[in-house]
Image (cartoon, rainbow, N blue to C red; front, top):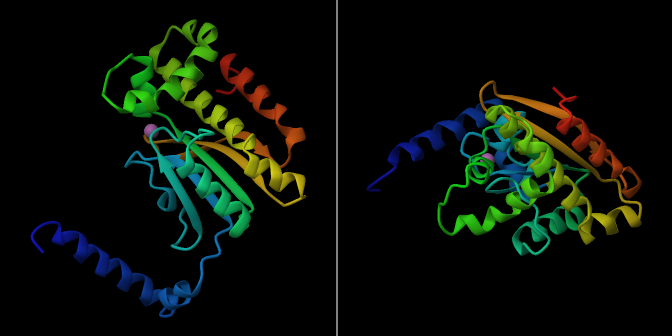
Length: 218
Ligand code: CO
């Protein structure tokens, strides 16, 4: 191997470490996966899903994209959600945003980065929706934090409005959608009290968005 040999070394050490604690770990895992949780997070290298919540391989079904966006025409994300809900029967979907998100910052700073600007239009839609209140926050870091939070909140709503989640709730399937946010600076998750277990609870999202904009959540 010409390059990145160190990663193979690390991989062998990692697998050996797990086997030391549970010799059958990988052979058991080979038969099937039974994760109870789907994680939708940002691609950012500083936000590794399993590590943050201390879960082992097999315990978390994961979809990541730039700025943890759920778009109703994104076949990739929708397929992950559909497979997780209909086939794996996960009981929880976590949308995890994070402070300091580069995608969100690019929108706030009107930065041009090429093709990805098209993807970030979805974040711009969030910004435009709340622009009046957001622009009144004088401090840039606070405005940035708030848009990171609002983006996560909006994506929770998008997810709840997908046919997959709606149909699961319609047939009485147990499924909770959570909205969390992670801070890179301290490695800690923050719960914004978003836990939606049915369509009747969707107003929870608007309450949280309102509180965030009024500065009541910090
Ligand atoms: Co990000």
